[in-house]
Length: 147
Figure 1 (cartoon, rainbow, N blue to C red):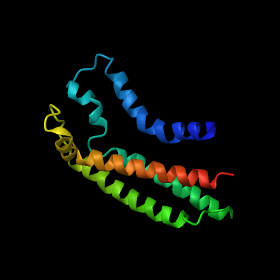
Figure 2 (cartoon, rainbow, N blue to C red):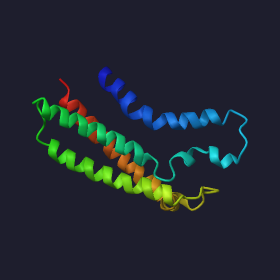
Figure 3 (cartoon, rainbow, N blue to C red):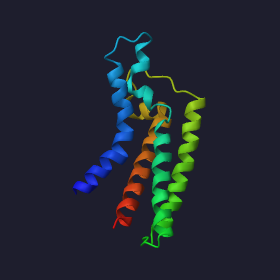
């Protein structure tokens, strides 16, 4: 359990949370500019989590490839996981690229409910789902290949 917790914190959680923590630290400094730029949603609203998906997917594929090359045990579901990772990574590339090209404005209020919020921040919602899928696949692959 300790190995899982440490690996998960360092490999999955740190890359996802440290940019947000950095932004929160910036809020403490007297930086000129619009305060809307320092909102946490600014860091993820345009599908920026897609970049983390690509990194996690690449790491998982590297682990699968390395296990195969060194003739280690690769689970039977490894091929399906590889296909799912490639699909998630390609989707993440599109989401991250769309977010970079077409920025989503920040909502002023949370009126309209969760459905309206999710519709407005659709790139964030989709990238969060892909991030969860990539983290799950990477975790399953990593711990199925560990000695």
